[in-house]
Amino acid sequence: MRAKEVLIFLLGVFAALGVLWLVFPADGIAAGPLTIRYSSYQRSLEDARQAKVNVDSVLRSLDARFQMEQDTLEFYRKFFHENPDRIYLPDNDLYFFDPLFQKLEQAARQDHPVRVLHYGDSQIEMDRISQNLRQGLQERFGGEGTGFFPALSNVPSATIYKSASGAFVQYTMYGDSTTVRAGHNRYGPLAQVVQLSGGGTVSLRASKSKYALPKALEFSSISVLYGRPSKDFEITVVADTLRPRVVTQKGESGVVLETWHFPRPVQKASVRITGSAELYGISADGNKGVAVDNVPLRGCSGNIFTRISKPLMAESLELTDTRLIILQFGGNYMPVARNSKVIEQYMEQISAQIQYFHEVAPEAKILFIGPSDMGKSVNGRVVTWPRLPELVDSLKAASLRNGAAYWDLYRMMGGENSMVQWVKHNPALAGPDYIHFTPAGAQKVGQTLTQSLLTYYDYYQYRKSVK
Image (cartoon, rainbow, N blue to C red; front, side, top):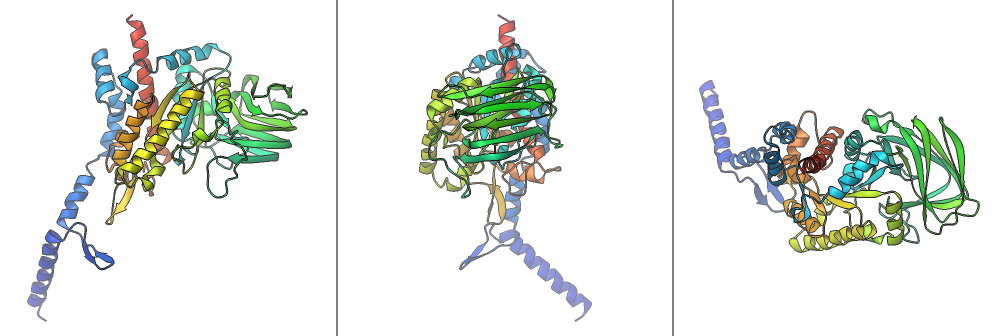
């Protein structure tokens, strides 16, 4: 074949491929059980529309969205009504968080920390997001340490290392097929209980992880939350600055909170227990200020709390002075959210959880954080899960209707198809599953949540200053 003929043949092939590119359907052509796909002009247009979320622009604008460069009242007006990072409040009540802020201002003057309880799914495992909120609140209101954790757990943390030896058995109310359930509903505020039968030791020290933030690197008090102690029950806490003090069995029939204060911050301690009891949690905190508990429930949709004993939960939250409860759920429900009716049923379950926390913690404020954007492969392209925007809006409406505030993580990220761009970002802000944040992404989310909450606190201070 002559060179000229070869050239004409190749040009013809390219022309045919070009025509095919122009006319080929974006969703492919069905061929029996298979679908034939080919790069097409229509698909290129859709991909271009999908990539409209510029993550760098979103991230650059985050700091700008918190900058008060205009008139103070005008800044707050725009933030509360237009800013995608704002917290939605029931009845648009800008005084909603005032009782919380009053309590936080008192935290530096009392002999125990004010507590924030952060429940969530696997997005907050390893203390992600929670530790950024903790760091920000402790910088503003004082405090240190990492909050409550189970006496026995196989879930690691980036901020504290703990180990247990002895006659411990953990019962959790949610988990996979390996989870052991209790024969009762006396799960504590960490949605688990550790049964101690005969004694044991829990050792803990501040983490050396590169992801641990400064305020988590030391603590100046240890607390043990427990119930149903045996007659020979004793606790001894040992740290390098603490002279051992033994706490023996008390006669209370309910929940007991016992605290050991250190004369100066430490990085490690051990809790030695003899006898038997139900252990609901151990905390490493400051002597005052703010404490933030991280409670990850992998795979959970946040519809389980009503199964925990109300009297036990109410006693625990009162003893620990819990004043803000954060519920961060929704993503795990996405695979079953096939239609609006299913979503409505889920909203009934979430409403029941919010009402439960209103009942067991009447002094606490409740903040619901909806799911992030989530990517799913549809016809060979990763896009936002169908019905995710509907789920997000439904969660917001259900939260507000039931007297809880709402933070829209989905729109903070940039909205539809933003997860794809968070994954592609350099460095990556989300993982290749198009669901979970990387440590860098979780840090950005946690910092933005903190800035948003503190903006409402700044407005609270501003209102007091102009009275």
